[in-house]
Image (cartoon, rainbow, N blue to C red):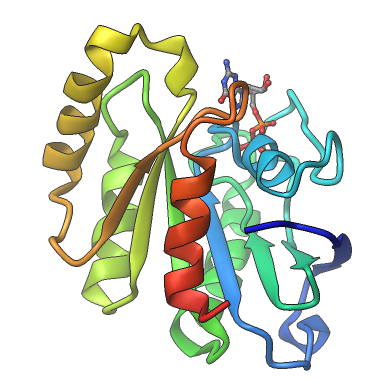
Length: 195
Ligand code: GDP
């Protein structure tokens, strides 16, 4: 997949701001700091389009990126960030929930999990919720470069087993730092988006 054009479109704070051009959408969910912005930048060969930030919990909207005028990446607020107030969490939870349950353009959720550690309770709850609602998921484990090569398969297995990966779901190990998993992830995205 050759990305020739990528644009930040909008930080949507309400559904009325979602794009209306009916292009397929790929959502990215994961804990704050899991590496979502870095993954977006790597997938589209841009250094800084998705803001990489060391302050977790900064993203409080659905951030839309249009790729090759053919599909959108929709970046979700990072979950599991204690400093976001309860009211805010409930609110963003509602907006996310509505989007995930009702957005027809949504083709795939990429759920990102830090490969260095077993999944957190939030990671497991999120995956279970997505599967309960029948959503197609690709689990993407991040920061693979931080794990010695000989231990990567073991870490991947721990994560698969802990979340109870459904057989129909894809699983890709990724490193934004080294570009590992990029082609494989584009292949999965193509399969779901028809692009
Ligand atoms: P976000 O909050 O999920 O958007 O996470 P960021 O993309 O901002 O990444 C959080 C931190 O993890 C940053 O310091 C990144 O440089 C680092 N990071 C992200 N992806 C990788 C990766 O694949 N490898 C390594 N070594 N560090 C990463």
